[in-house]
Image (cartoon, rainbow, N blue to C red; front, side, top):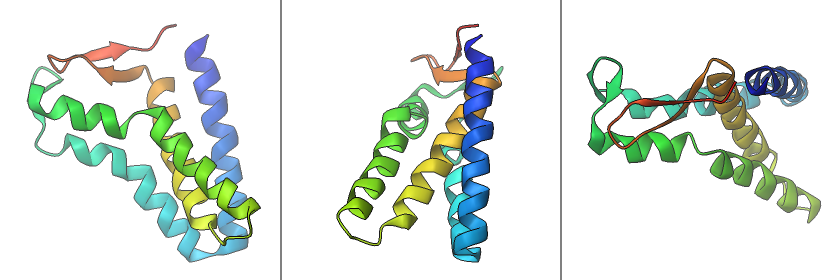
Length: 123
């Protein structure tokens, strides 16, 4: 059930990003691509075998796949926007990051254990 909820959240937030990109243009689309891919940069050269990450790379992977950071970026952008600061880029970056994490969770990929194994997302 949790994976279905993650998929629904990802779909709804992706729809929101599409609306924002149509309104804001190519700059917003570029931010979506960058922050949609950014969390997986931790995977470059990080595999140690049999789908496990090298233990020294687990911390970076888990940091970049932590929902509080992504939500925090989007919320900070929203807060700054409410205060009159033009911070839409921070909102877009945060939401794109959240979408990446939500898609991972919907596919069953959670954070990593200290030995690099995937921690499953509860069903």
